Length: 585
Ligand SMILES: [Zn+2]
Image (cartoon, rainbow, N blue to C red; front, side, top):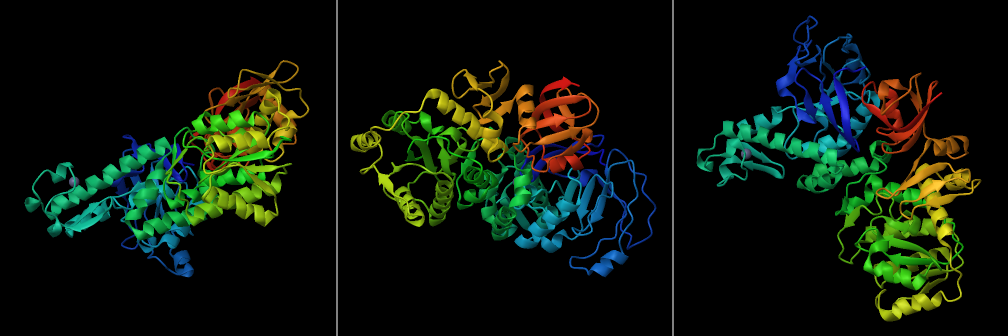
């Protein structure tokens, strides 16, 4: 139970939080000024500190060096009392537990900082042992260069100890490196400490500058988390030190840790600008859902198309031409790096219309392998009467040919030189001669069902919508879904390409065999939002941004999850669900 820390925004494992002291501190932040250490039990027996709302009191502790044996840890372990002031407990990852503190300090940070795998393992273990709504602190390790990655991993609190001491030793730290003071003939910074010629710049000045640089980097990190764009920044920032690059790759390998914490939808752009972009949760999750949940419902041939720089694809010049040629006689699926394949029904679904990648026309081997693998899985799951590849020569054609031969398919190729030449467009048009057109109603129904599959799970579209006579009002992409009794079930949200349900729709969902995402609450009627303490239970596969059904003895509601299911269950503060519609029971 924590009264003094609350998470306000999440971006993967990183969070913007609030240390609720008499003067609140927005985290991730330096907490030197508000930390009060009750002291080490190695030096003396300590009385329990009195504590105060002005500071975060570090309870008396007995830190052990990194690598201490288990028996030693056990025999020197500390009993932490329940206190009613803001407090921090000192723990190691494997002894971490819910001691009732608001923050936890990992005592062996110096032992794992600089070692990518040990860092990842320690943070993941500590986080799994600690309540989600408490702050995690690393002391004596933060620098302007590493702090973005540390926050990305899920660390909330830092101190200026290392930055200051490095300055006093004669090192000038920046976000991209460090310099000997003597080597600087010009100060690469404009902070208050750097307002003097390099020749007069002292070690004390360097200490001040280092702390300023650390502060500035932390405020950038907070901004990035609020924008949902810390990952884009970290992919570049981590480049400045090998172990940091290795560290965030290690976190990519820890897929479940990152996936649980990554929102399913976001309105910010996703910059796919480095080779690691392929490994980020949003990309992997889309590919996974397209190849395990999505199901093609059209009887028409498949036309594989290249992506366009403009999103959604259908609004690009090239795709307008493809569309003119196809005329609803084929199911259009775009191939793209780094997303994989995007069926036309999902072209608005996050991150399909939100990513921006560097377009050079040259694909790396990793990109080709990834897109080929997604296409292979897609074609294994979905049968088509014909497969037409309207893709340019080079990587696209190479990928289709690879999959064609792997699966023993027979693909028709319609491009000569370039997909938009008159000849290519003519080929595409003619090759579909005699194929029947699908209707607008069929197309719209298939969109709605595909979104349900993607959001809720394989088969969900049919479970929810096959027994009702669907009526659509308003045009794509703002589809409104009604049943034949004149009740609205859902609306398509064009910004994210997802469905949002009405109360009636939520009941259809609850009563169907589709996987539900349910949040069970206490006996109250939520208005506006459900706070975490009111949550009795929540499905563990709920992710931030998910549609959820909220049920309790007094209320039935539908809304959007603000945190993951596991976090709702273990948190005692913060908004769990934003309610859209509610009815009393
Ligand atoms: Zn400076």
